[in-house]
Length: 513
Image (tube, rainbow, N blue to C red; front, side):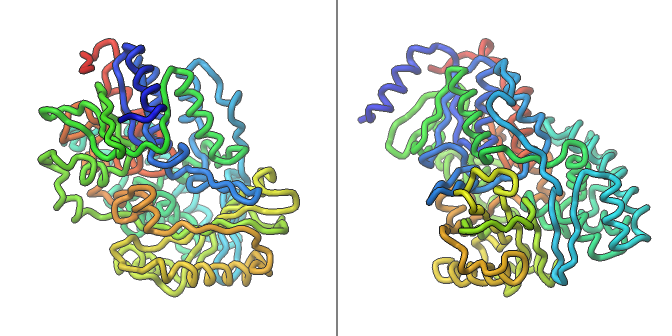
């Protein structure tokens, strides 16, 4: 039996005769896909497991504080603006983006600080302060980053890699740009100071990659940030989620929360709808999964004999690290703390090897501290600050029992913050919550609790990644971090952009309803 809301939704769908597209998951990839499908003439239903939209961009509100659960760094804002334009609207009418300066404040273990920004002269001065001999090398690195950006982002970021021929076609460019090198090795060709090598190579960690194994194609991020800057959405990243949901509803689409998809229904190798956890079957002409790609193939297609993404291949793939995130609010403000701070521990390569290769929880850590109230004080009560601190940790193959380790680990982080940039922190915290690797698996349906899906190594990029047009089932499409081009907001928004080329316009679809 359908509940009342399900009956109302079913009745509305029957009244709208446009071809029906179902989107699984309301992360940014899924919401962007829904808007683009609506612009193609589909009536769209988005199903979300959680009680509110956003996926990894879920919003926690407690004790007067607002905490964005996940993504907080907005780059390439035009990818959002395009979605509003598809609906004949302006993003600025719904969302205010504010530039963040510095982009990141990087604090080394010895207390030295490097401010990353989009100011060319200020960056040269920062580089010179650490190592005058590396200024010229830094300039050459930026030129190389721009060249990679023009190919990797502008030309290939929203191109479907359906065929191995697509990969062969770009091989000359990949060789020319030295994509076979890792990010760290690429950076090391230009600068000699070890601290500057860290400053210029850490970006893959923002998308789940190890700088010592991630393909140097991701060096494009340095130029991407320089070109468009780093922004924050006033009201929190959740304001973008709210705005996108409004666009979908304005197109006649629906976002249904607390509606977990348990199975993609396929008939004779063609996706024909989804089955929800409550047993309801919703028919569709196309299905788009914004769920983790490994989770999609392993758990949502249980009855399909898969030719490429078999259980064996999924199990043998390499996955990103997971994350330990502590959200907390303080009774006082820390006005000298930047919006984005990276606090580096005593080790760089060794810590990353512990996380990605050995899969052990190390005794030391590096941290990313987010203080949104530096830009938007409304996210906390008057005179207070909202924070989250994130520590990269191994995914669930590590065997760490987080039910036992979570609180001691949080206390370690609290102590480190108190000793460095948040003095007296333990006595100032008034609200607190945690997100651990099991939450990524159980709450966010991420295979092995990996926070960013597949690790972005060369042999898991472009054609080697799960395709945006499913290789296993017709009329099934994939968006989000686990498919091409990868994680990070520009990546997941670009994955939805790919649908413009591979999903037919609604008027040309023979409906299966």
